[in-house]
Every structure is written in structure tokens, then in C-alpha cells.
Amino acid sequence: MKRWNGWGLETTSLPLPASARAFLVDKLGASQAWPDATLEQVCRQVSASRLAAHPLIQTDAVERVRHARGQSLPDWIALRSGQIPAFPDGVAYPTSDAEALALLTYARDTGAKLIPYGGGSSVVGHINPIPGDAPTLTVDMTRLDKLLTLDETSYLATFEAGVFGPQLEAQLRERGYRLGHYPQSFECSTLGGWVAARSSGQQSYYYGRIEDLLAGAHIETPLGALDLPPHPASAAGPDVRQMVLGSEGRLGLITRATVRVRRVPETESFHAIFFRDWDSGVNAMRALAQSAAPISMLRLSDADETETTLKLAGHERLVAWAERGLRLAGYGAERCLLIFGVTGERASTQRAIQTVVDEARDYGGLPVGETIGKRWQKTRFLNPYLRNTLWETGYAIDTLETAMTWTNVKSAATSIKAALRDGLADVDERVLVFAHLSHVYSSGASIYVTYLYRRVADPEKMLRWWDTLKTAASRAIVAHGGTISHQHGVGTDHAPYLEAEKGRLGMVALKTLCETFDPDQIMNPGKLLATDGRVLE
Image 1: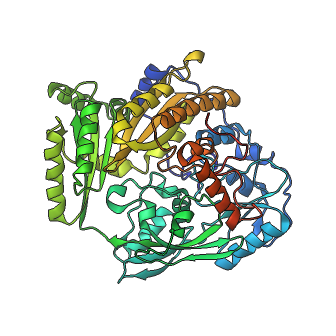
Image 2 (image 1 turned 45 degrees about the vertical axis):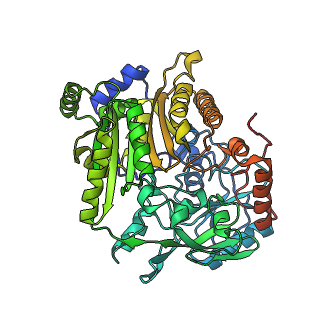
Image 3 (image 1 turned 90 degrees about the horizontal axis):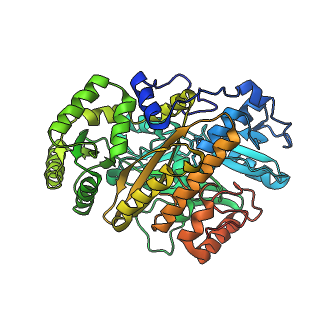
């Protein structure tokens, strides 16, 4: 069963080695593990449902608590403290288009607000009920999880939209195919969620982002069904498919999606290269992206992430041995780690490896083989479980991300990290900040930033600190011309900054689009579009 107040399955955990604890104490100071509210305590806070009875709707407290929040740090603070301002009044699990339509009709007829829910992995507030007079119904789509058709002539697969990432790939693998969409939330996110949030997978350089993979869809909207046929291309006016991508549940319930798939590749491997410093690594990444090197992934960690990743993994002897060897080779404290992936036929991947190695050496890169890459591949979906361990050790962790042109990448990364690192100086708290470039394009790259700080007993203080850090980093992103989100979406957390990217006329167009499909405004209120008039000054 999925954790109700943390990441992933209850049966999976990732311990923190003693050496890693010592590292965090050195960087941030000693921590304390404050007690968390129990599920039973939180359930006692759930008030009576305001929803009219319906055979598809469950109103018991446990279901409502489990669907109350997502996976952002504010969500964790709320769940772990038990201070949750609003719960859904009920939860429904449709198993067909007809049931999804029935729930939309019910919401319209009763004045309820409706929140589409996939895997619950949102980190920007997509699935959180907003306090108000109208009752809220959360529609959990995860019982719609089947592969419906596989067109092996056209390489198109149609799935029900509630399918989780591992289920989707397992159903394709039985037939010899792969989608290849691997966000870090892969184990706990769904196809419909990927579409609604305009998701990006770790190997998007090869497989494409979800907008590249989505060929067609079926959406049950408040005004009726919207079918998007899987044309390979079209010049028939604006692409309605692009309106659905990133719509964050404002237009309706995505019940089916047709995606472009590939044959399972002959081989796939991940390799590591060290650079002496961040500038050298970034320059090498840009050169590789602009030369269209035949690779599936590039991921460059800055010096702090390179160090922290090794420290948190433990393996003291291995780490000490590696550090000695790297220092002897001239790769000191500023060294940065690049992990790259190659996917495809064996001969072409060997050529790709050599291409990357040759290019990297032009920038002082030191290839170190597959050992680190294999370790990364093995743990890439396990690493989020460290959030649970860190919280229970007394440290809070959060992430944010953006994308911008190569011209601004270096200066933006410096400014964003500085804004976070110095953000709690006035309360004498240290913040550990590190970053990597993960998704690359010929014109720019995504910057993904992680930051940690000590927990305190007062959840309101924790939330104020988070807001201070998030605001400072978001303003730095906008100031450097970055998108407020490359892959996490908008939700509520990023809504105040959206106008800086879309412009006032663009915001009017988005608002009009939502009102066109949902004239009674029952779909996921407060998400994507700020409801309180806030804009970035």
C-alpha cells in the first residue's frame, strides 16, 4: 500500500548510513526527529461529507485523508503535522467512460467541485482541495489501467489513462515494446497525470517528452466528450491536443490516451564522466546537445550534488578510494559528474559512447566507465524514498526546476542556488543546495535544484521558511528568463508566476479556454490559474 504521508510504498525504505548523517550534521547542524501525527489522529479531524449520496462515491475518512494532499514539501508539512486545511468530501474510482461522465454530471447537478487524481505525485498543489463553501469530489482514475489496443503497424498503443508507469511498461514489454517515459515519479505517477502536467522523462532526449509521445486522447469534459484522433501530423488549424497537454484537470477527465511506442531496444547502458568544474561540464553538454549526438540521456551534477550524492549513498571505503584517485588525476573539490545513457542497436550505441567520450575529452572530461551509471540506473526510482528517511532524521528536502537558453544557464544556476543558500540567513539556518542539468536541447537545458534544511517542531514556521525559499528561487528563475516549470507543472504553487511567461493576453486565452470547456467552473478550481489575482510584480 502507498504511504499516506510520504513517498512510495510502505514496504520500501532507503536507510541513511551513519556517515551520511555525519555529513548532514556538518553541513546543516544537528537535527531532531519531531513526532508526526498518526493516520488515526488525522482521520478524527475529517468532518462530515457535504456531498449528496452517490453509488460511485466513498466518503469514509481514510479515503479522504489519503487523497487530501500530494508530495510537495508543504503537503508533507500538512500531513505530518495533521494541520490540513481541507479534505475532499468524497472519493470516486471510475472504471469506464460512462462512470466518468456520470461523475461530471453529478458534480454539475449538485454544485460540487471535481479534482482529477492520478498517482498523487504532484509537487505543486495540483490535487489539493481548496477550502470553500462548495463540496469537493476527488476522482481517482487508477482503476482505468488497461492496455486497450496495440497497433503494431503504426507503433501506437492506447491505454486507459489511470495506468501507472510500471504497469504501462510491463504491458508493453510483454509484446516487445516500450514507451520510455521515465519521470522520477515513474513508480507513483500515471499516464493521464503525465499528459495533464506536460511531464518529461529522464531519457526524453531519446524518447521525447510526453507532448512528443502523445498521439491522441479521449477526454470527458463537462460539455461532452472530446476525441483527439492520432494523426501523425496535421495542418488543420491549431492543435487541440496541445490544449489538453498541461491543462492540469481544468478541461475534464482524461480517460484514454494513445501514445507512440518503440520496439524494446537491443541494448541500453549508462556511463560516467568527471569534469574538473561546472563550466567545463556545461560547455561539454551544450556541445553534445548541439551536435545531436545519438544518446538517450545527459545528466550533469554540480560539485555539491556530486559530493552529496556520494556521501548519502554511504560506501565510505569506495568513496574514499574514488576521491583519492580523482584528486591524483587533478579532479578536486569542484569536480562534476556527468552520467549519460545510450539506447538502441549495439553497434550504434558503441559509436555513440565513443562520440561522447571524444567530445568530453575536448573539455577535460575523464571517462570512468559504467560502474557509476549502473548504480544510478539501479536506484533512480528508489532515491525519492530518501525523502522519508531524511524527514524522520530531522531534515526537510524539496526540489524545484526550470529550463532556459544556454546563454542564461550558468548565471541562472548560480543565482537560484544563491537565493536558496542565503534564504534563511536571517534566522541563522543553513540550507544545503545542489543542482544538475538533466534535459538538454540545442537551445538550452533544464536546471533541477534540490535543497535541504533542518526541521523544527512548529509546522507554521516550516511553511514560512519554505515560502521564503520558494519565492526567492522563483523570482530568480523569472529574472533570468526561465520557465517557471520545465516538468512539474503549475498547480497552485507556480500560478502567481505564470503571467511572466504567458503575458496578459496569453492568460486571458487560457482562462477563456477553461471557461469554454467548463462553463460552470467545476473542474479543479484554483489550479493553473491564480484565483486571488496575484501576479509577479
